[in-house]
Image 1 (tube, helix red, strand yellow):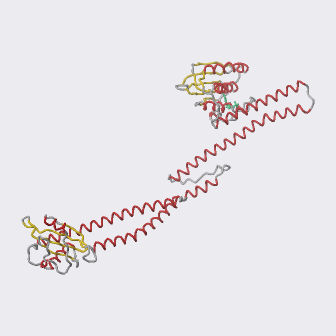
Image 2 (cartoon, rainbow, N blue to C red; image 1 turned 135 degrees about the vertical axis):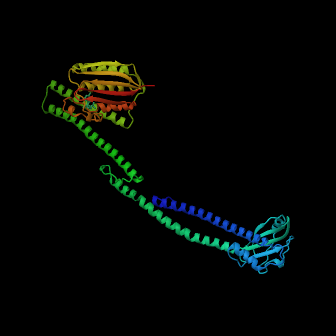
Image 3 (cartoon, rainbow, N blue to C red; image 1 turned 90 degrees about the vertical axis):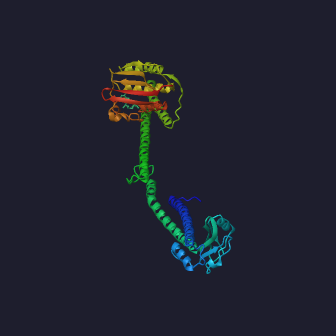
Amino acid sequence: MYIRSIRTRITIWYTSLLTVTLLIVGGAAYGLLSYSLSHEMDSALHSVAGALIERDLGRSATLLPSEIDQAFRRFFGFSPWDQYFQMRDPSGNRDELRSLPSTGKLPLSRNALANALRGLSSFETVEGLGEYPVRVLTMPVMESGRVINMIQVGMSLKNIDETRLRFLLIMAGVLPLGLILAASVGWLVAYRALKPVGRMTAAARRIGAEDLSQRLNETGTGDELDNLAKTLNQMLNRLDAAFSQIRRFSADASHELQTPLTILKGEIELVLRSARTQEEYRVTLESALEEVDRIAHLVEGLLLLARAEVGILRMDRQEVDLVQVVEEVYLRLKPLADSHRIELRLGSIEPLCVQGDRERLQSMTINLVDNAIKYTGAGGSVTLELQRESRWASILVSDTGIGIPIEEQEHIFQAFYRTSEVRSLTERGTGLGLAIAQSIAVAHGGTISVESSPGQGSSFKALIPIAS
Ligand code: ADP
């Protein structure tokens, strides 16, 4: 079964882990307790037997129960009433005279007898002597390396068993209580820790595509949830910027398309209002064709940008000689520059080849040179250069034109952006040239940058990686 609530899952995990830990710790404590109790009893029995032997009991005729009692008292701290003591001769027969008569008879196992004859002591647990098992120590009494007697002391395991049982009962009571307490505390802690997540979910639900200005609350604590809120807010900032860009792009695109369409419609309506001469129709149609060309150009540019945006711009990948590209652009735009009385010249040209789409690289360069001519006054100059910059081929277009204010430089690569100075000029650009040029450079793994000072000129640099 899958549990949806993280809080419940954390609590279950936590409680299960705690249960396992407590069981392991409890088991270990129980084992340790049993071991040390048994160990203590064995060493006490050993000491009792040792003390009795030391008092020369091995040879004395009779035993006084008070002596045994004393020995038990000394080593156990009290004298258990079901204590056992008996003496045996080396063949294992019970010496009735020297055994404590009040208690039951301790058996002598074959193993204990064999050990005693070899001079070794044995500990055994014997059942059936009373309600509880009895721990028995069989110890030989030695004299000049010979076994002269065997002493057996025993004590009921009643106390040990009762202590163990008490421990188990305490554990059985405390463990579930502790677990219930720990689970409740765990649940509360998880509830408190995850509460901000609920608030964040509610806030995130309120933020729609239409209202991307809202942000999640940042607590400023620097914890994981605060980091999450920060990250989501950064994402919202990017989304907001992207949405605004899309909105601006659509508005600009419609506006740019509407202008030539309005002109086209006006011209056609005007010419249809009354009968016209052949010549007048021709002039109107030519002008209409110009507007249609402009619309086609715009749509083509928009399509290219849209494709580049989603990464499906069709591109040839072949070796392109950039010298040829630059020279062709130069020859193609020289007449335009001449007609504007601008000197278009070729600067230093290095032989360089790149992998890419010849047509697109050419139209990228045309865009840059065309702009340079458009935004340079008569008498100015435009220089076209091709140089190597480490692993890049750099196509440099510098002009002595109107320049671009610093604060506007970062915007000019956006579609439809025109600097304030240019907006007042009569020259009608599409506003897509640099955006398209940048997309082409990026599609080749390169980039275009600008350096410019208003009134002095601009210099556009396209960097394309050189074919290795
Ligand atoms: P446009 O069709 O308006 O030229 P672009 O995308 O090619 O559109 O250029 C965007 C804007 O960048 C231009 O409108 C102009 O303001 C500015 N710009 C581009 N190239 C130059 C240049 N060489 N000198 C000055 N301004 C430039």
